[in-house]
Length: 336
Figure 1 (cartoon, rainbow, N blue to C red):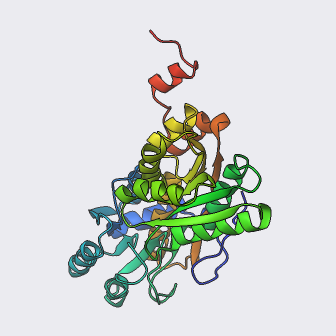
Figure 2: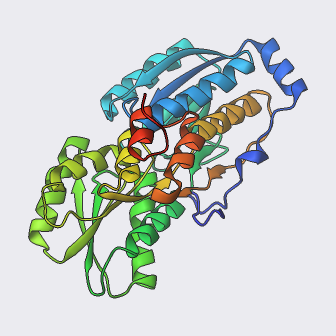
């Protein structure tokens, strides 16, 4: 698919293929005995764990040692402490997914000021510039993901209905882009559909906020949740409603994939490719440590996932088949 969004500073996207490593690059990187740290917003999601696998595997092929992988559990304080500690350990590079746009800016700036290469995933703290304060941002086309989710939900919305959006109550580039894109697509392509928005501050709040939103707006006929982990909480919260609203989300996590495959409330997913994104993050890191220029923004397009292609999409994203139990239930495998 074509990249439709822009980077946080209006950059046009560079595809991940723009950052490649030749055999001689890998040899040169191995000779440097590089040390790299990874600081993630969370490691609880399927997406985050698979992305880290892609990073670590590619760095390992280049002889780079990962000295730490930090789970910040969405905490600014935890991320700031981790970055301050790692700065004193002087790795060659730090790969970070900032937990928000504002509170962690100074801690990230201090990394670059210390001469440590900083590669960002999905989000850029406020005021930081590519090529100056960080090397590159590597992300999905989050604007495109929001458009995919809107288009998938549109087919399930009757004329004159409303769509509910469960948005993240934090200033975060990736989820902001998805929310904006969803609303704009509806405004242009389904002007008859009103968009009603509620915000959750933690994953465990999403279900409650969804239920309250639907209680306040009975005309809501479908929901969009900005990523899959809170989506599962929303599914649980609305599963006893009659009718159960159709739901779209971003990321083909295991539980979301099961709901989609079995014909549950999740009727479509804008899928990311976290393993391939992790590989692109690692290649970008090695490239800058070899003193070569990198694109300001590297972006991967989303995947349109519906019930008709969820099995193969799951295999593409997770690099393994769906569980035997689901394949048996879908009559794709005989029980023994």
